[in-house]
Image 1 (cartoon, helix red, strand yellow):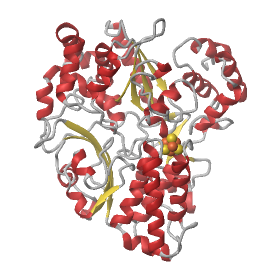
Image 2 (tube, protein in one colour):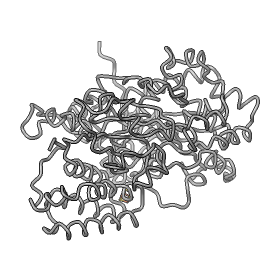
Image 3 (cartoon, helix red, strand yellow):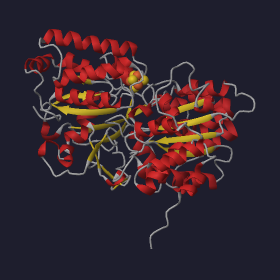
Image 4 (tube, helix red, strand yellow):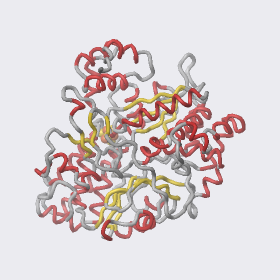
Length: 559
Ligand code: SF4
């Protein structure tokens, strides 16, 4: 017998009065009906006193909230750069190469190390993904040190391998000040891309005052891993959810926060249940008595990875990045002092607290401290998530840990920070994996996504698809990004632009410079880097493109 479906009223009553109710309400209606109908939007708007037009505009912003049937019944096939390299166009029927009718594309679903993901009825067939490969260099790990232990996902297994020992140590021995000092001494910095010192952020929230009568401080785990080519947070959440919960509980202890959210991207549906189960286990064990922890699933939007946009999304508004200052540490969720930390950052804290700041610093090579999880995909024999000591030569990772490109082909280029850091090529591939070394090449490590292109790939087609992605994901709030991504897209497709290669290059560089100098958030400042990589490393390919007036192939094909 079919399970009775909740009524509109039951759904509304379940969520009204809860913190951040808009996203769960939209997801609940869509889960029930397959889409969010006009009546649902009206009911939610009325119940939460949101102007109807405002809520409708918010819903339309997201990739995955459907407004009409067949809604979620339409399969969504990953159309990210790595899946395109692996042939997702055929599944989508693009170019007449496959069946594809009825399938629709979706941005990178964070499974660049698995089969091409297909999302049907809001769920994926294959979850969880693979465990991180063991590194062949025998380098000691922090985040992944215990992730492969059997049973680690459940609280008993987590505890059996040292889990929640850091929370005990912090509560009984260190206290908030001692905890902040350990994190400060470790030099841990944000692992989502911004690399802001974690302890400084926590201390700012601890020191921030809360207006009398208002609610307390907040910890937000940014699990909106939308950067193409990045899938490390997925692995941590799937296989080690209690590490993230313990990291959040430690952040709450250090700052005095009483409320926490894990903002989970829509494209990780199976992880929602994993997190809910883990939170229930932690609550039952009395570990979250003074810290309420909730999961909120997004609706599919790359820009929500930006912390201001994420907070707007949590609050139920259209997720435009916020102007700064003020910063979230004083005016975050509902204007409350808020820590926003990445999944990997939070999962790094328990081992650091247990084993000490000096131990963590010693994991890096040379002058570098600690480790970074990187996601390697594309033309590589062993794709996956690897926790590398900072300072490891990129060549060692690619050739020894990941076994190089298929069929022994030379590696021509490797993206950094997913797509956001552009790509390294030529002598740039001799960097070590750390911000200083990579920034010297005009790129940045960011969240650690690395997409490998062997010598048979067309760098111009890859760059064009990257810019098409950024143009699609630009929220449109500021014109340098809104117009700049479009102007770059038009020039890379050959729709418009000078027909002289030197003029074309000067104009494109000018657009890139303007975007970098004046865009309001990281999307607009980072998007030009991939174009600059193309100009710097492949001027001959640019010249051929301009001379052919943009008659290039669509997908990142082999040359
Ligand atoms: Fe929106 Fe782009 Fe401006 Fe960021 S840079 S606020 S994504 S338009």
